[in-house]
Image (cartoon, rainbow, N blue to C red; front, side, top):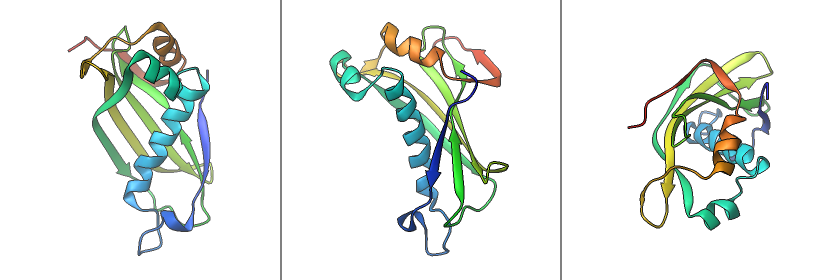
Length: 147
């Protein structure tokens, strides 16, 4: 897959008192894009529930580059920056582009898969691994050693 993008329309409720995108909405848009990708590639909430596995985030950071205002058209992409070979741990990156050519923000998320019964990190089933292998990679993508 060359690129995965979700187009987003900014709603009035997404704005802060300064009439630009609230900081927390950036994180919501990243989560929307990630979960949409997983859902479209077979890792639905029902599949996660049946395997007793869900994503857990260790760090989520947003670097704000340009102001986003009501009426701006946003494109949110998804890229895999780092992962263990078994996809147990991973780093995902989202770029938020407005009007297709202005980089508005970069979100970086470090996470892993959690066994929701044992409350411990888990190696994901093959359907999870296959979905993650389909995520477009960053230019600097690298495999990491498990921790």
